[in-house]
Structure formats: structure tokens, C-alpha cells
Length: 240
Image 1 (spheres, rainbow, N blue to C red):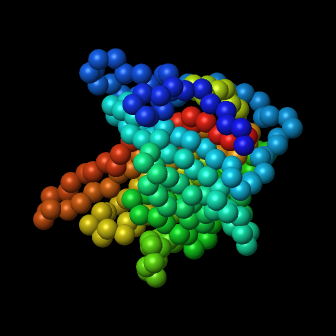
Image 2: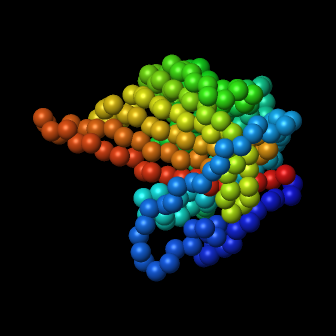
């Protein structure tokens, strides 16, 4: 497969031009710039095929620091399940993402521990409509545990936007998820995660994804408010 990209390499890490850091100044990552646009016509959703891959740069949004380059690749399609293997910069296994059917998450490894859902969680609702929302109530398991933990996912599908990053300009649907869940670490209370991404039918995956989260712990009578990492995943290249 031919791979399309626009990036350069520093010290073995592929970096987009927009993320070159000057000196030692620490600054937060600039917000993604988008403009509203019309739905692509025709709306052609890319068909999933074994071997398709996407590379993303994982970035700390607090200080603009690139963390690692991640490759997601469809490694198998079997029994109605699309299995996407995820590998980090040093070829370490980051776990599998499973969609069943395409566009609906059955398992997601982009957490501190991989989650498998009792009922699927949509990546998007209906690409032929805008300003949609829905709430999916499900439960999830971690690893080989048989214990199920509750989760509620509110999905808001906004509308089509044109988004430009160093790897190209894309027409993508903006989607936001508000996820409330019971963490498998019982010391974490009131866990909430915000997942925001721009999904491109052209590439069959998101172009940019941003995640953040909050929870609190108790130290005796004292409440400690905590934040998870504030991350961005920005497309570097994809196979065609």
C-alpha cells in the first residue's frame, strides 16, 4: 500500500512541521483550527481492509511535547470483527482495538487498561445527519477480569468541518464524547473523560483526537482533585 504523508524526522521521531519547538520555552499546544463546511458528496466511507494503517503523533497538550509515534493497523477481519493492532515508537504492543461492526467499538486499548464493552460504543452516530446526540449505557471489563464496571457515554455529533494539519486538509465530522465510568482502581472516584475527534470518511478514522479526564481521591476527610493527561493524537500518514 502507498503511504501518504507530509512530515520530517528528528532523532528517529517523525514530527509535523507545526510542532517544532524553539528553545526551551514551555507553551501549551495551540487549538486545532477548523472551519465549517458542507457534507462531502458523495459520502464515501472507506471500506475496512486488512493492512490499512494510520500513524499518529501523540502530543502532551500542556507543554506541546511530542510523546511518541503510534501506528494503528488493521491486522485481521474475522467473524464480523475488525481488529486494529496498535504499536508504539519502539514497536511495543499497545493492545488491540476491536470494532464490530466497523464504526462501533467493542474493545478500546487507549486507556490505562484495555476495556471490552458489554454493548458496542459508536464512534459516530449517523454521518448523513448533523447535531445529533445519544447516550449509551453499558459496562466494561478490564483484561481477563469477569467483573463488569458501569459506564455511560454521551455522544454529540456536531457537523462537518474542514481541518488542516501538516499531513493534509480533510473534511471531517466533529464528534465529542462525555464518558462517566467507574474506574477499575477503586481509589479513583467520579471518573470522567472527554474524548473529542474529527472523523474522516476518506481515511476511515479520525484525523485528530484529543482526550482529557478528571477524577478525585480521598485522603481521610480531604478530597484531592486529579487530572489525567491532556493528549492530542495527530495524523501523520495513512496507507492508501
